[in-house]
Length: 333
Image 1 (cartoon, rainbow, N blue to C red):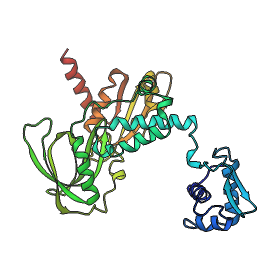
Image 2 (cartoon, rainbow, N blue to C red):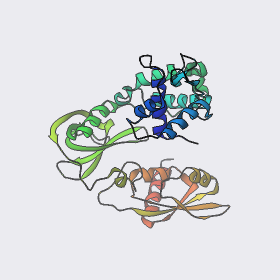
Image 3 (cartoon, rainbow, N blue to C red):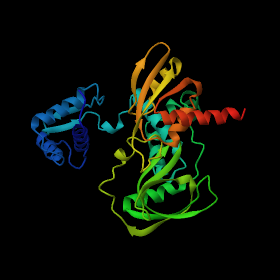
Image 4 (cartoon, rainbow, N blue to C red):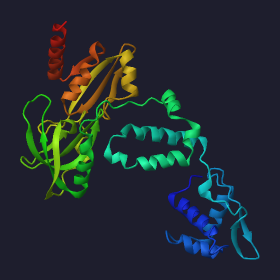
């Protein structure tokens, strides 16, 4: 049966005590005392742990534990044995290989770069290289690559400011503006959306919760002004009905009813547009779904991308807005 975290800690403690050359042949009572640093344990628990370390196929230790009657304690028949030396199973190696490949997508980010040495150690320790080379990985696992790194240099200082609860001061320039503006923000949370990073927090000048794209920040520094996160702010609740990154302080969640072609419906059902998505009606020709979201630019852009595969059923104002956008697009051809 699956083992809990405390059981694995006990295995490590038992292993360390059996291998302790300064005090070899620990007794059952000594193992109990050693394990009680984490929680109280019974003799029966230690007996079961010793048995599992020897025989449990799921653990895969098959530890050569022997009770020495002369010295009245436990030892390993192989003095070089340790559960730390157990090689990972093939499935574990594949899982680690995938995780390492995933982490490497963020090599350019300082916050993640701190773990680069640990990732390398994992690769070396489990001999991932003997299983798959970098070229092998590229042939069987193709992860989406970020084409933008602008603004990622601000991740580390912003994360530090969030942890220290210090306001940040930065110069910001919107993509559709030639004007640079200074802002002071109490940063609450970092959020990634479609390979772009954003910071959300309380603007000190207005008191409103706002979001800024890191790729539009020109310069940034952490101030000495301390703040406390508002008790009314919860990141999960704040973004619960958002589509993308935009959350308007003036708009409320609204039900959007969409009708997709039968072919497009399969994609929408297998990867929902939003966690609130529900299938209302489905037949061989189309599929109607509803989502409850705060209307945003990102939502409009996503819906327009479906072209003739989508019909907006409601609300009426959204039908009109998207129709105007489609007419503008058609007029350019």
